[in-house]
Amino acid sequence: MTVHIGAAPGEIAETVLMPGDPYRAKWAAETFLEDAKLVNEVRGMLGFTGTWKGNKVTIHGSGMGMPSLSIYVNELIKDYGAKTLIRIGSCGGMQQAVKVRDIIIAMTASTVSTPSRGIFRELNFAPSADWSLLRAAVRAAEGKGATPHVGGIYSSDVFYDERPDLNEQMTRHGILGVEMEAAELYTLAARYGCRALAVLTVSDHLLTGEALPSEDRERTFGDMVEIALEAAFAES
Ligand code: HPA
Image 1 (cartoon, rainbow, N blue to C red):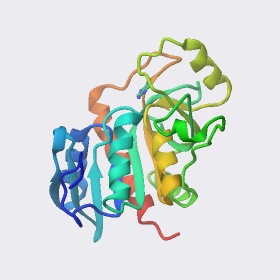
Image 2: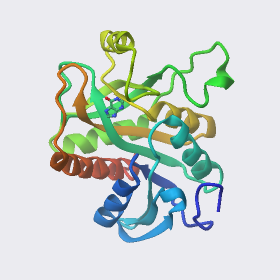
Image 3: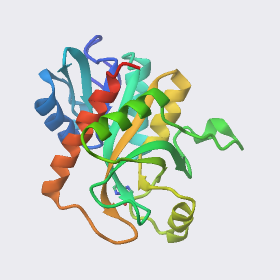
C-alpha cells in the first residue's frame, strides 16, 4: 500500500496502461483482460490487474493533468516496480491534417511546465517516448488499418486556455495535438529507466471546433487499448 494506491505488493503488473478516467480503466479491464481484479480504489481512482494473452497487465487511472498523473506514476514505478507505462487518452487536434478520430502516437511532449520542472533549473528537458514502444505501437495501429500521426504533442496545464497565442505557436511548430499528461509521464520514465508512450485519439479540434460524439469515444478508446497492449508485448 502507498499513500494513493491500496494494492498489496505484487498486485500491480510491470506493464501499466493509464487512461485519465478511472471508469475507462474499469471498462478496458473488463473488456480486454482476463481475470481482471480491482486492486485500487483509493479516492475513486480505480486500478485493475488481469492478464492479456497470458501477460500480466494493470490498467490504472491517472486522473486529469500532470500533478495527478505524477502521483500515480511515481508510486507505480518506485513502490510497485512498474516498468512499461502507456497513457491511452484523448487530445485536441492542432493541425488541419489531423482529423477528429485520428490516432496520434506522441514522439515528444512539449510543455510549459511539469511537476518535475524544478529539478532542471534553466534546462529545457525534452520528454520523449520510448523508441521500441513507439515503433511497436505504429505497427500495431497500421495492422488495424489506421494511419497514425507520429510526432510532437503539447502537454498543457490547462484545458480552458486563456493563451490562444501559445496554441498558435504550437500549431506553427508542427505540434499535432494538446493533452495534459504525457510530458510528466515521459519525464518520470526517463528518470527511473522505464519505457513510456502516449497513444491518443483526437476527440476535439482546436482549429475546426469539431468534437467527437460520445458513442464514437468508446470505439476509438477500445482501439487505443488494443494498440497499447500489442505494443507493450511486441517482440522487439
Ligand atoms: N486541451 C487539453 N486537453 C485535452 C483537449 C484539449 O483541447 N482535448 C482532450 N484533452
